[in-house]
Image (cartoon, rainbow, N blue to C red; front, side, top):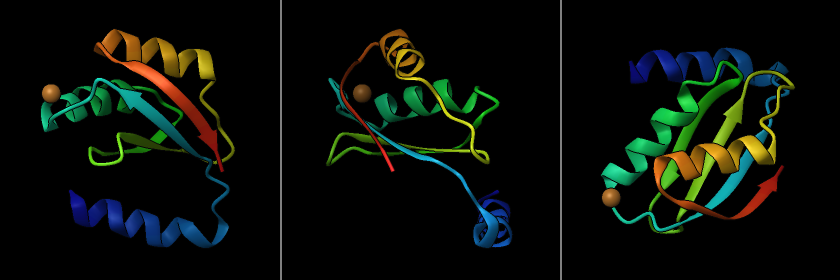
Amino acid sequence: MKKVLFMMLLVSSPFSMAKEIQVKVSGMVCSMCAQGIQKKFRALPEVKEVKVDLDSKLALITTHGDKDVTDGKIQELIKEAGYNVSGIERK
Ligand SMILES: [Cu+2]
């Protein structure tokens, strides 16, 4: 599974217009928290990958193509998972 994702990344990266959204999440403490958040975002068709960094309390969301996830949607999903958004940054 990891290998497949890596291959997809390699194949798509030269032409990729994917957006990267950094979401600062408060209340996240362990890998179970991280998994809950990842599960929420992976369920969205516009989301390609979600990585959670527990040390910096960041969820890094990569979208497909030029698709975006609105701030409102991000806040909704994080709240549903039981946490709070303390900041959203787009690259
Ligand atoms: Cu936890």
